[in-house]
Every structure is written in structure tokens, then in C-alpha cells.
Image 1 (spheres, rainbow, N blue to C red):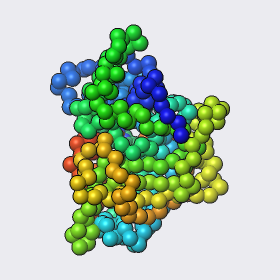
Image 2 (cartoon, helix red, strand yellow):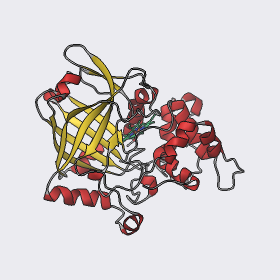
Image 3 (cartoon, helix red, strand yellow):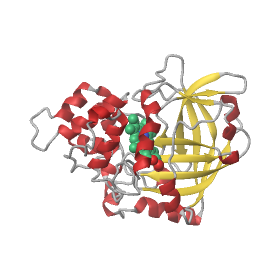
Image 4 (tube, rainbow, N blue to C red):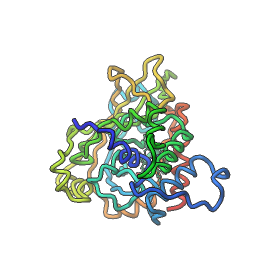
Length: 337
Ligand code: HEM
């Protein structure tokens, strides 16, 4: 297991935030920040720091690849939720894997490309759909959009010659959850299909009997978690993840188990910085099986906007402030693509 020493904190934070190390710029203000929502200020920064706007690309998780396949629900999923895609019929899915940052050409080998993302669209009857949007880390650094913006601002205020403690060092010292986030090992995966992903934000699942439980998504590769060692990262192609996925799906399939980690009474439901103990019950929701990279992959990628709050009956959001603001941020980014 890789561990990250203190000098690596800044690049890893930058990766999460969609920043490049070259980031020193201020937001390109057509109106004062005070007139903008917090999420719009966040998206402004992610864009600027990635030397954007990059027309046609997302403000964060700009580099990605689309795959298609099916999701088959498990027999036990209906015991947790009455959601239509988790009963006994399979759904077609569109999945997008991605690197962190708003840099469309970021090398897959860059430490800033972590955390990776997975976004899953379940196509339902009558053109309805629902999405799961998750990351390759099991927590978020902060609990509110305001704190996320403050984290960005601390990064922005930190220059190569900033006196110690620098603004980012000060932020980390004052925010143990952000400190804990940057310490999570984030090795480069051998494949998008050999990486676990985590929902981080909790949702409320309600079954047909009206029984409700809170839980978080876990997306686990059936091929196991396999990372590259440093020598392999050094010699890998800058696009090795998309090349590998295309080759893998050319020869066969790539599957993941989707499950829900269920909260115990007293677990923190609305705080995405708090990881629940591993002994919490898990309910298998089903199997995601990816089959192909579609020929019109790039068109789909440009058009599709995932949204973790488009939910069927049987699944509702928690009151996690990060979760509740995500759709607004994604809408700002999508409107500018
Ligand atoms: C307030 C907190 C957050 C902000 C402001 C934010 C911002 C953004 C933005 C602007 C995008 C680009 C959206 C688009 O153009 O479609 C994005 C994409 C993404 N975000 Fe977040 N995000 C936040 C929290 C999270 C969390 C908690 C997760 C996972 C648990 C997450 C996972 C992702 C993924 C996987 C993508 C790529 C989606 C795709 O493939 O289209 N984000 N985020």
C-alpha cells in the first residue's frame, strides 16, 4: 500500500478539486463573487484552474470514456427498496469513467487524475432514468459547499513562496477531515474495471412495506482491486485507462457488484467526511456488466449530464449538504460546456 507523505498533500488536493499545480489565477469575474452562488464560485475556480473553459468538456472530471451494458438486480434488492430498477428486471446502462480535474488531456498516470469517477445511468421505461455518481475514495474532505470553497481558496492563496504555515497547511490543520482525505492512498488502478468506487453521500432506501434504511453505494469490481506499481505507472501510456477498457471490452465483459452499506442507528447520515465502520451490513443490489464502448461514445459523453438526485420512488436523498448542492454544480458546468 502506498502512503502519502506531507509534500504530496497539495497535488492530491488539487486533483480532487479539479485544480492544476499551475493554479495561481483568480476567477474570471464578470460579476462579483458575492452575487454568485457558492457552487457557481466553485465551478468558476475549477474551470479557471484547469486553464479553461475547455469548450465541450466538464468543469471537473473532464477526461472520461463511455461504456454500455446492463444491470441485473439481485433477489435481495427489493427487500431494501421499491425502486423500479431494483426489482426483477434488467436495465440498460450507460457508464462514464473519468479522471479528476477539468483538464481534458490530463495523463491517466498523473497523481492529479485521482480520484477517478464512475457515473452510471440506468435507463428505465418511458425514457425515465436514474443515476449513481461515485468516486474511487470512500469520503469527501469537507461537509459543506462553503468549506469546499474555502478549501479552494486556501489552495489559491498558497504560492510557492508563501510563508509557513501556508494557507493550505493552515486549512488542513484546522480541518482534520480534509487532512484525513489527503492521506488516503490513491494508487493508479490497472484498469477502470479493477477499481472500487464509493457513493460517499447517503440515501434513504424504502421498501414496499414502507420500511426505511439509510445507506451508501459500494461499487466493487468482480475482477478485484488491482493497482499499478510505480514502475508500471512510469511506463504507461497517458491514455492507458481508456485504451485498456476498450481492449478489455473487445475481448469480453467487465462486471461490478453494486451494493449498499447500511447505516446502524447513530451513524452519521449527513456527513460525507465520516466513514462508517466496515462491519455494517451490506445489501447486494445487483450486477453491472459492461459490454462495449459504443461507436458514438464521444457524442453521448458530450450530451449526457449525470445527476445523483434524479431518483425513483423508493430512494430519497439524505440531508447531506454536499449531496444536495451537487446537481446545481453539475448544471452550471453542463450549461457552459
Ligand atoms: C459540493 C461538492 C461537489 C461539487 C461542487 C462537484 C462539482 C462537479 C462538477 C462541476 C462536475 C462536472 C459536471 C458536468 O459537467 O456534468 C462534477 C462531476 C463529477 N463529480 Fe462532482 N462535485 C461535488 C461532489 C462530488 C461527490 C461527493 C462525488 C461522488 C461521491 C462526485 C463525483 C463526481 C463524478 C464521478 C463526476 C463526473 C460525472 C460524469 O462522468 O459526467 N462529486 N463534479
